[in-house]
Each structure stands twice: as structure tokens, then as C-alpha cells.
Image (cartoon, rainbow, N blue to C red; front, side, top):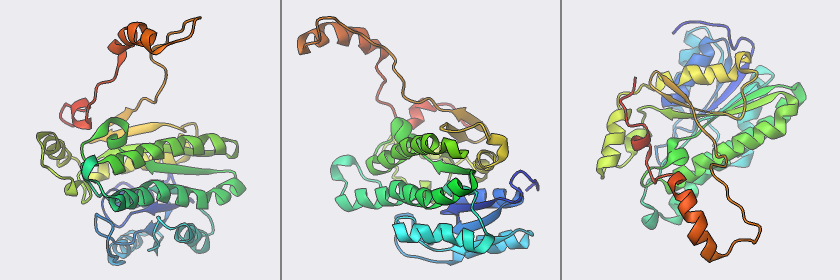
Length: 306
């Protein structure tokens, strides 16, 4: 990996960085000069168990390359533990400049079979965890009048995928959270952006392949390296992205996409006010050509990755 200085002097907390995308982001940011807090509880893909060794291995790898790193094994899904993650950066390196909310689990199940526990487990890690860690860092960012958040979203929320109601809801919620953070903290020179990654990882490897759509999606992801996500995260965390906030980027192999965000597509009005009948008679025919189809991400991204 090429050495750089885009993040020289900055301190980054990267959640879920013991393996996969988080690990590659940590290595990339360390190579760009950042001091890194590796946060990972070492759980299974479904969020069970704990093991400090994956995170410690990344810490050792960064140190072996001449960088600085510390390990946090606290869970993002607990408010007090999330504060300890941020405090680890402050205590070890004296500040916090970058938060990458990458930690995640999967509990895939078709909606009509999804249990309450499967719903809560995924929401707790992805959506609550992103809020907790971001909120814990906010006072530090306000005080120093600077900071960058990078959150991981997914086309499961932006577009849709089968069997991921919990994951998709959490990931689209993160987009709204990121935009709110960007608006509320703009006055403090704090930025907040999302990345929607396409990559073959341990977590993606657990996606069920029971339907042709799921099989096609997973086969394409197998070709994609988690390391291809890292340069975008490092850029968004750097001062080179000082004017970039409230955006969503999809990263797919060597492709980078700026994703659209909801805006009015078509409007109608009447001075008499609407009734159910006039909506059916006038609004539906006018707006139906602009309806968005019910698609999954493998249909929208139908071509082979570059």
C-alpha cells in the first residue's frame, strides 16, 4: 500500500475494523498518517460471541508498518460502551478527528418470518450503534470545530433486497441520520457522509442464496475486494473533502457512484381540494408513469463490476 500524508496528525475511530471493510479502511487510513482506534468485539456475523484477537491483529499490523494504533473491544450497541470507544481515542492519542461507523451484523429472514429479536439485534448494532458512537464524538468535534463522520449504508436500504427488512431499514435510517448530523453540525465545520459498499466479505458471505436473485447478487459480490472501499473512506475523512457533506457514495470495484436522494418528481394541485375519487381519476394516471419499480440492487446494478 502506498504511503501518504492526507490524514497526517488525525485520529480515527473505526468500528468493526477487525476484519473485512473496516480492517482495510483502518490500514488505508494508517498508511495516510492517521492514528487509529481499532474497535471490534470479535463477534460472529450474527453478532454472537466475542474475540479480541481479530482487532489485536490489525493493531499489530499497523504498528509493524510504523503506524500507531490502539484496540477497543467495546460494543457500539450500548451507549456507555460507545462513549468508552471514543474516550479510548481521547485518552490514547489526545483527540478524535474521524469516526467511521462500519460495525454491523446480519440476521437475514423474509419479513413475514422475521422475529422481534432478529429485528432488534440488527437495528441495535447498525442504527443505534451509529447514533451512539457519532453522538459520543460530537462534543469533541464541537470543541475543536472540526471532524468527519463516514457511515456505511447499503443498497439494501437505498434500493432494496429480499430478506433484509431489518438491515435495509437500519441502513436507510443511517442515511437520514447522516444528513441530520451534517445539518446540525455544519456550523462547527463537521462533515457527515455515507458509503454504500459493494464487496465480498464475511458478512456478505452469510447472505442466503435461496433465490436466483440472491444467487446472482452474491456471485457478483464475490468478484469485489473490500480494499477497494478504503480509498473513498480515507478521502472523505481528509481535508481534501472539506466541502463534501450530506452525500451518499456507492463504491463497486473500481466504480464510484454519487447516489440520488429523495426529491419531488411530479406534482399536481387543484383549487377544489382532492377526494379519493379525483385522486384515482386524475392523480394516478398522471403520476403512474413516474412510479419507481419494485427492484432489488442486483437489478439496478445489472452490469458486471469494472
